[in-house]
Image 1 (cartoon, helix red, strand yellow):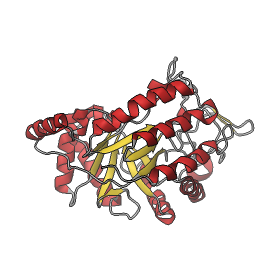
Image 2 (cartoon, rainbow, N blue to C red):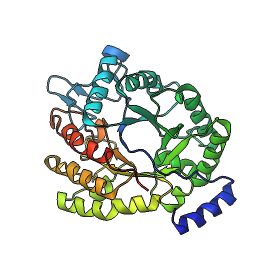
Image 3 (tube, helix red, strand yellow):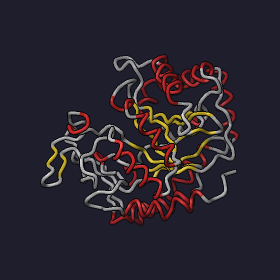
Length: 342
């Protein structure tokens, strides 16, 4: 940690009663955000998340591109098997899976994801999306959710762990709902109630967040890459990625997020203008991979495996084929072979 971070951490520890552990020699990971929220009538008896599906013309009203697997169901074992086979071949080490509510469609898919991950030697954690209750979010609701996840799934061999502790990623929405002081309380309560504790990676690049969470990240940089050429995207990443790692400091898990592109303009509820990042025939993704490796984070995060609504997927599509997977397979091994940071 920097001197400023240490001072801030001591202040926050005094204010909130606990300080995050220090993490050094963190094993490398290449993780992709994964969405298990898709369903179709053949498996789930209804469309889930896919909207206005036109199979004859290969168009989906809620998706920028057409998946090579078609409008699939994430509860179908063959679909999940193919996802993990592709991911393993591409050099990913695991998925960060969207998670919302105990017992809902996303939660019901977790056992299949974990068992398939174990089969392929990959890891799973969750992206904690929202804090209950929805009308008035409270730290107690997050504690109940996270303890539920730990007790139900945390001991599974495929759950992502850091030095034996299960890892969680906390999305910016959930972070903003109860603020940093609320998450300080949640982390302290979970670590007190769950034997061995857990690891929390927060969606905010700031020294204040680094003083509370075990690591920091950001979900999607398209707001800063939108409308840029590959050269401009490289210049942005070259300036900002090292700063993200520096902000995490030497005692926190430092993450850098890369995207192949972004286009959510098919979502009618999102009003224009939208922050569209062009794929530039694959150059956007290559440039960000190169700058991510140069920045030397602990973990590279990919947004996303299959966020089809936002056109950020690296999963094969009719429009882009396996281009992004091939690029991942080129760069992921190079990153994973690097010596651990500090």
